[in-house]
Length: 141
Image (cartoon, rainbow, N blue to C red; front, side, top):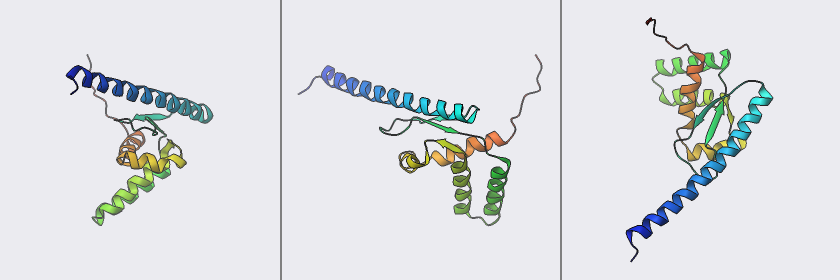
């Protein structure tokens, strides 16, 4: 039977390999996002995955929605709410997220979304924030 120390050493080695794989993927992700920013001439917005899945990106990059994209999203959500249609609301969220995400690319997106099923909702929330205003406190010191 293995000792506590032996088991903990095995677990630590596995964690170290996992962390090294995550760091290697992060380098790939940041290089790709840097190239996108360079080609687009503007910084992109980024989100980080809460966990690492081997073979999947650690970072996601997206742009702010255009006025037309945001209006379409808002109109679709409004109509869905009037009709109490949750499926149409989800479709609106997926449409907005899919229109703004730039990394990972389209060819890798289905596998990424399967590994992280909350991706589109998270992207929708953050993309919508970029189209809206942020409140500021008027308190003077």
